[in-house]
Image (tube, rainbow, N blue to C red; front, top):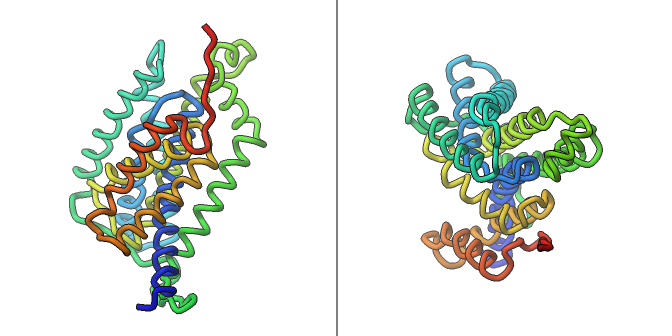
Length: 294
């Protein structure tokens, strides 16, 4: 294959994969911005979105777009119910406690999906067929364009939500100072529930758009969650645009490593980049160091 064509092929593949990491990373940041905690159930929500959409398509014989819409709504509700059952009853929900409980949510979600939907890998047709599109000599599947377009649209809507809507602003206020937000009449616990629903919705969107390319199964969530977490840390926890750009960068780095060196090294890229950032710039590439006066 021509080097120029190979470069385009790897770049598009990297952007496609990176878009999924970016959405997952945005989900991590939504929870972090609202609670200062890390939600380790984010990857399982990605897997759940794909599994529900595939099951709905296979058993109910309904259009793909309807199956995906049902899955996204269902995962968002799962996120809200998880928060109501596990986080809401806490009298003093510290960030560390929420982080630890999210591990329990992840384990329960994975187990329930395995018991209810089964262990068999599942999938469904691409949104607009499998006929590849030729771009600069490279063969690109139409689903890649769907992934890229929906990822950018989701990022813009999330940015708009936090910057322009009243609910988004109350969530930011609750994250900045829970006590001060409560004093001015903001229902902090309700803000946390909305954050979980929005983060789960992000996972559901990522799951339904990537499943036609990679298939999905009950054990896919852990690795997707780790890649999304790596992107969130690379971009800087709390920075939505940083997480999004870092997700794209991580996907391209993986694709180039797998294509030019060896596929065996592909998954190691996330670990290496994560360790480098933690050692050299713990606040992330786009994050800002916090100064505490004592």
